Length: 478
Image 1 (cartoon, one colour):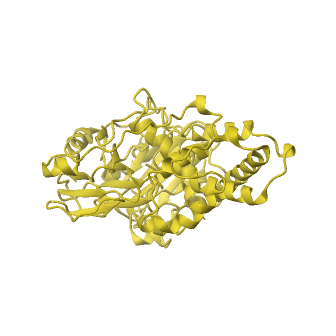
Image 2 (cartoon, one colour):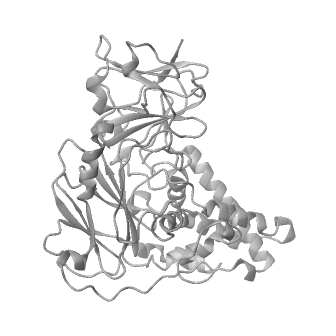
Image 3 (cartoon, one colour):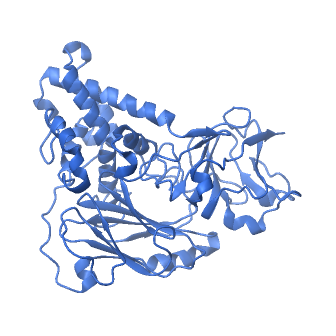
């Protein structure tokens, strides 16, 4: 979904696991009360960094697919949910909402049998993608315009314990390392009037178990799960308890076998798949080592977030940070930083998200003080195989802003209605007031204060990925 700030690419409300972590840090004994076991503290730090994105993912997974009373609940496991709507300033539940691509979601239980996702024929001019994410938060596969094309097809997602051949009618099999998986669909919306076309496409997405797809009897169901709740009442619980719960669905088979030595170290402090982790059973020295490791782990994640991306003309540009197991190559701090910055971000080859950090004068952009211009030279639009957009948010809330023309973004599908300069360049006027009737077609309305601007490049071309294309500076003007 997009931005690398509070809740980034998928714009999820910050999972309550952060509340849990902070509460644990506050209720543990202080460093002064017990001597720190440096060996245990190092293991706790490593386990905390490793588990951070997995616990965060569990919190979202629980809210979306398990906890029916939760306002964020979408649908039961193995059932598709479509969210066909255009976000406006009235939508305040999530930050940096994406107005380019309405979403569909599936939480998949792969324990008993594989799951099948089918997409209808979609016109070639419309981008769509299905991002497959496992419980490690690895993007282990993609379905869609870039990866598999826009033709009608069915794909199978198989869990770590499935053995068998690709069934007839299945275009490709994706192997998931974990027993549960998350699928996030993005379907391009050309404009507000296009929403019914998107709804028709979403209505023809299908999600079904393999037995349903083959029209055969279902295998015996997997055991029922007692899902541990995450809410404020559990604020004094240990996040390692959640990690232990999640790890039972992350077997050390296949590519995950490389984690065996690391998990053996974690077991020394009680982090083991499927086992309870009770803080109240620890000695004061063990608690002190634990809190020391958690604090240092959290700081390392924050430090890594601050260094993500590269500054290009005042934009923070990211060409890494999300991906599969191979992309992270055992860099657990990078994986944790990516989750903290914005869980469920697309792999760069699928989408890039330059974020405006400073204007051409090196100042934080603020439309209560300045007007701005963003000019793309002729032939230098963001290099996208699909499309690009520039979206405006309030700099304080990261929400869309109310404005007189009900415009929240400017994107490439709007180009025919935008006015180009004499040299064929395109200028976007970023300001709180109208730039005048003759320029209003190119006006991106801004709040009367700090601004937060996100550029999205879907299915980026090589020039974006290798850095040879750079976003132009946003310049002040009076």
